[in-house]
Length: 370
Image (cartoon, rainbow, N blue to C red; front, side):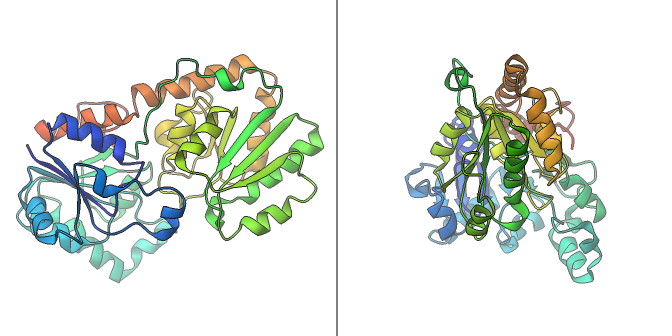
């Protein structure tokens, strides 16, 4: 069985599951990269050297061979790219296809009433409802968006992004002797990531006298203004700039809490996977795509309303002197990723679905009904 995965570019969020599928398919797996990675992502350390991976083909260098693979493969997974013309011949021939998507209306569902948008959604999705095509929902709000346009009825499954799972023998080793609570934020400094929230949190920490420290990782257009707004809070909040994905993981290993403050424009939020894998008490905006799939609030992390700094502060304060509870939540988070949302589990479930298309096999986690 030949499996082909088509997306904009390979990165550290997709390599782990690609490696697993490559093994399961005994080498009959290809990842087709449709475009070069943006310079911003390269600077963030996302460039993984696509040409060095045995299963990667570059569409813009091998168009004819890639078109043939996309048309003739036993199964094609397609998403993360707007180059619909690439998948259209296969859809028209009604060949088994799995699409994956983040939410359609990140800026608001009111946009679905656009006539031009509805026409495009019909051409790309709705007209193939009766074909052998399914949808992987990369986020908890994807199904609702596609329901609005009446696409993929009874053919939507939970999915996401699956960064490398790192196994730790002692999950809390690096943070067990620290008296100061370490809180981590790692993202781009842009409006909908809300970097102002950790600064407000730092102010609350200062006023309360709580022994806590915040590290902010990342760069972006709001970096300078955010740092300037933290004047007087230098003993509580630290700006360390951009770090590679590997370096971010090391910061997570040393953090007690990880906070994701993005709003509904965050389609998934793979740092949630990574922070939970690291045993952090993860506090994430419930509007982000990953949070409702991965987090059971109060069990393996917490969900809060986006930008609700007071909620975050209450959780941190409540757990400040309860190391045992923090570790319990961190352990539960780690187990959730290991046993349910790891690349290995997701790849195995995908491969099973390729074979029998059973949409009722799982009751939770990847490839369960959305």
